[in-house]
Image 1 (cartoon, rainbow, N blue to C red):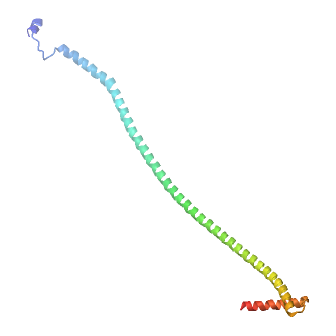
Image 2: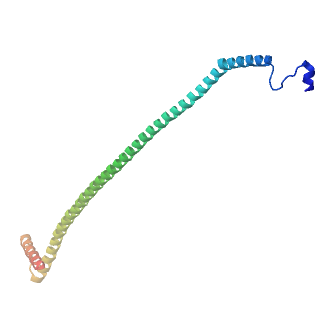
Length: 178
């Protein structure tokens, strides 16, 4: 306290500043407020607004993308269901076609088997008829030879021999059929 009293002679209160300092401080404060309000705050407001717009735009774009993704998902699901339906239809059609082909092949196989059986029967009947003719001729010749030896007379006459052989064979067939 003594120091302050020695300087100016009057006592200065350290809590209250000098009025010149208050005026200079006030002018500096006003200039600072003017500069902040004129240049800094609008720039900060633009920056904040740009960030808000970017965030809101990002949210809107994200919502739009989400909506589009949901639509694409629904389309995909619909296409998948349609593809499954088509696959089931194709599978059923293929089974029906396979069954039709199977039936056609079986029918052709039956026809071929019937044709082969009939051809075999026809061939067998023809061979039987040939064998019967050959046997008749052989049996007739043997019968005539035996009869000639037994009777002691010659059966050289063709008509007589044929009639005799036919009667003999007819008798054999009638006795064999009983």
